[in-house]
Image 1 (cartoon, rainbow, N blue to C red):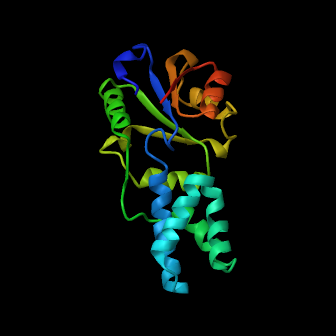
Image 2 (cartoon, one colour):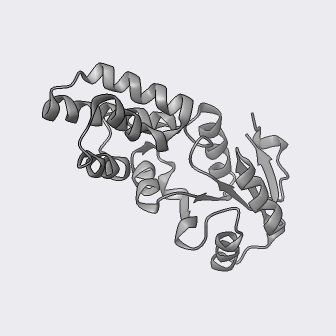
Length: 199
C-alpha cells in the first residue's frame, strides 16, 4: 500500500494506470458477463447462472480473451453472437458503478488536497477504457483527472504517450511519479526516466 506521506513532496504530478491499479478490473468484466448471460438466456433459452459461472471461471483461469470461445464451444453458440459480446465489452451500461480501491481513493484525495496533478494513462481499447472511466464512482474526483489513451499513440511500454503528456502540461520528468501494477508500466517509466511505484 502506498502512503502519500512517503512520496517525495517535490512531485508535481502522478500517473496512474486504470485497470487493477485504481479499481479491480474483474469488477468490470464480471458485470459484462452477467449482461451477456442475460442476453443469451433471453435469445437462446440458456441458463444465465451456468453461463456466468463458466465465464467467470474462464476469466480467472485463462483471461478475458478466452471467454467467448469457451462459451461458444460449450453451448455451440452461433458465431453471430461474437459481435454482441464484443459490443458489450466496449459499451456495456453496467448495473453497478465501479468502485475504486479504498487505499487508491484515499491517495487520490490526498493528491487533490495538495493541489497536485492526476493523470490516467491507460493501455487498451480507448472506447472500452473510456466506458470504464465513465462508470467509475470517482466520488467527486473526476474533475481533477486528465486521461490519456496510450493506444491512440503507441501502447505502453512505448514512452510516446508520456512524452506527449510532458509537452502538453509543461512538466519535467523529475516532476512525475508513475503508479502501476505490472511490468509494462515499470518498463514505460524506465524508458521515460521517471520514478515508478508499484501497488
